[in-house]
Image (cartoon, rainbow, N blue to C red; front, side, top):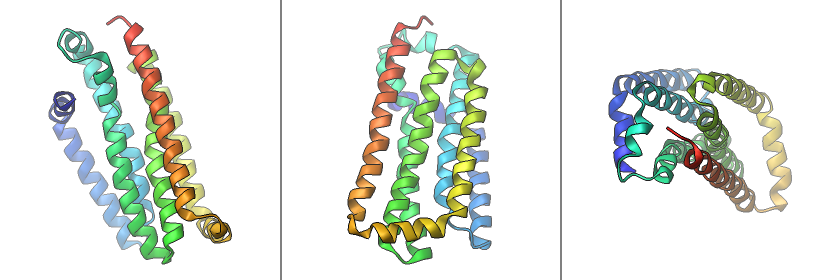
Length: 208
């Protein structure tokens, strides 16, 4: 697993560095413009971009043909593709808790939005990866465009109806906010587990 992650980092380090700079610039603009709520959702885009870069590099170098001749199992290979989504999901949760807590002064609202920020990158990557394994990088662009469109619309709707969402959270205070947040996180993890299983099935029956 560590070797696969190291390969991803080393093989496209210049691209990752450029991506990091872009994220830093966007975050800086969001802070200066008073739109800090954008920051947690930036982490939703990053794992999808990293996944596209990784799959593209592996397709050009025919990496799967090589890696499956080593002791690395197909299951380990599949799981490595989901690591970045979990990592950035956790970063989205932490930043969401901090940003929404500072912006709205409500721990209940911040916790639910943080859980949502955690779920978004995991769910979108969980939908993307099995498609790429099944149909290859040639058709990856289709799912990428569709995913970006849905994600953009989702973020726009969240931003537009944020105050209504906060009122809804206040109205739902009869239900424990910890319970709601746990349900969102648990739902995302369940989708992730199903996606990993589907990807493992696809990769195990596929000839490289």
